[in-house]
Image (cartoon, rainbow, N blue to C red; front, side):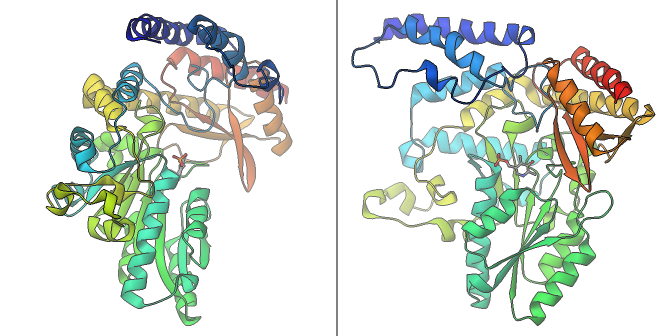
Length: 463
Ligand SMILES: *Cc1c(COP(=O)(O)O)cnc(C)c1O
């Protein structure tokens, strides 16, 4: 494909994406597809001879689209949203076209400096502690996923604990709510921590600080080394908010690292009225949130901030001879390879930069507030319905509810809504089974939320 063909095909590909998005509502949220069905449409071997691009692109319609769950469908209420938006898609495209590797400042200076700047902007925009800016002691870095961000925080915490106490990783303990995301426990295991302690949650699914204190005291008596507290703002199952300040105080008093996982809810912090949920951040050592969930930015884009960048860089930095570099040695620049596990890195800041400038903070705040408003109105209708129970508070835009007749009726209700093909919700369990409806897909409108409600109400009557 020469550049003229690229230009022609590229314009058509943008048309294809716009058509796909414009017509999504005519398709089922999830295509009916059986395991192996997609693979069966593909040849066994890679093509020996070049194929015309027309033929390749046609298979998007023939093979790809009919084999997907459509995450950008306006009836998508499952899991959490994985937002995408036109400016973000264009940022991704530009990043692919530039094809740079930003592992060192010198390998792509603009990639590094735009990333630092955009994340510094977000410190202000989200009301985070000023010291987290790269112009202060801390700084932000874009990772692939919140799981990677949490893993990096865990590795850093392990090294700091080793330096401070001389303890071996096998005797170190990680604490997080039993409601925390699985990446907390998985990261602890991957980082070599000997122990993971799930902390009990209260009736609103938030971690109980007294249980954290009890567990730490018990572990100290047993000769173990408490090393890491993971708090969550907006848990995955129910968007519960852990008491950050209390957990941060315990972490500080015990010399532990305090990491805050706000993967989903962090985006809401661009609205000042939400920030009460993250009171106590000045006691946090690290914080992660995913613009790729709820800030109109395509996966992958997870931000990790650290209050002090030195322990992170110390834990991650190894310099082989082929990476020796004058700019790095001058100490004047950031080399983001030292802030993450991989060496190579994409220019992911570009899409976030495009999004922040295209929407403006005002536009993003309006988007979040709209989603929160629709979620609350859905929650009110659920609460008023005689056969439905709201099972958790709705601080953000996730609504958790169950059928009063019990777990079977709840599962049957979710299945009935999903069988219609126009809306998609998932279920979870915390004592009892419940349905999660996450409002926040890019193309969802009020009418789609109303349609979801009509489907819930009509089916709930029949259960
Ligand atoms: C979604 C989620 C994660 C995992 O995010 P990835 O970016 O997919 O790794 C972690 N923590 C919480 C609270 C989440 O909701």
